[in-house]
Image (tube, rainbow, N blue to C red; front, side, top):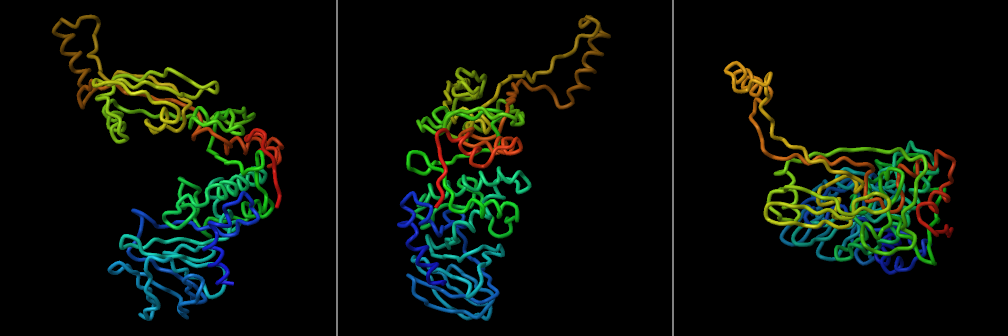
Length: 410
C-alpha cells in the first residue's frame, strides 16, 4: 500500500494531465521550499517508518521520530536512537508511516506521507496526500465550518476544481501547490471539522465543467452584492467568469488611511516611483462599480494603475472604493475674530498648542473607504452563504456564480 502511494505520487503529474477528476488520486503539497526551505525537519509516526526511493523500499525504521538534517549538500536522516537510516540527495525520498494514515511533519499531523529532497543545501518538504483528504483540510481553512452545509459543499467543489486545475503549478520544485493563500490554505489534520468533512464526502467525485473542461473556480471573500467580470480584473476573457448579482449578500465595509509618505513608501516597495504622492484620481470603473483605472500623481510624475493593480498597489481589501484626500495641516484657531489682539493671539496660540501637542504636519491623508473583500472574480464566499441560507442548493450556487457551468459526477 505504501509503495502504491509513492507510485501514485510519482506518476501523479502525468495522471493529472487530463480533466478527469477520476484519475486525480494524490497531490503533492509544498510545505517548505525556496526561501522557506529548512535546515532540519522532524517527522513523527506511532508505527515507525518506511522509506522509498523511486518506488523501491530503501529503509525501515521502528522508531517514533526521524530527524532530517541538511549537511554539506545532502540530508542525513537520523532516528531518535541516533541511527543514520539514509542520506538523501537531489532525488525525493518518500517517508511513509509503517501503518495508519498520518505522519507528523514538524509537529503538525498530516494525512499521507512526507517527501524530502535537498536543494541549494536545504531541505524541501512536501506532503503527498490523497485529494479528498486534502480537501477535508482545505474547506474549513477557507470557509467557516459552521456555515450552511450547501455553502460548504459549493466550497468543496470549488476547492476540488481548483486543485485539479493547478496541478504542476510548482513543477520546478516537484510539487503541485503550496499550502498558502497563494493557492489554497491547507493546515493538515488539525484543521479538519466534521461538518466540512461531510460536505467533502457528499460531493466526492463532483466537478464543475464548462464546454467539456474544468472550470477555474476562483473564489473570494465578499463582493458587496455583485461579482466582477474577469476582464476587469485580470484582462482575460473567460465566458463563465462574468459579473453577477448576489441577492441577500451582506455588504461588508472597510476603511484604510495612509499619509502621503506612507503611500509613497508603499508604491516604492512595488516599483512605482512618482515621488511624494499628491493626488489620486479614479478615472474608470467597471459596470459593477469597481475601480479599473486610477491615476496617481506625485511631485516627480504620474502612474496609471489599471485593472487589478488599481487595488493591489494600494493594498486595499477590494477595488470597490472611493478616495478622500484630507488635509492634515491644523489651522491656528481664530478667537472671537481678534487674532491681532494680544489676548486673542495668546489664547489662540494656547489652544493651537493644546490641540496639536506634537506640532503640525503638512502631509495629506488619503482615506480609502470601500465595500467587499477580495478580487471579486468567481464565487463570493459570503454570497454563497447568503444563497445557501436562502434555500439554494450547492449546485444552484455554483451555476449562479460560474455562468453556463454544469456539474459532472465521476
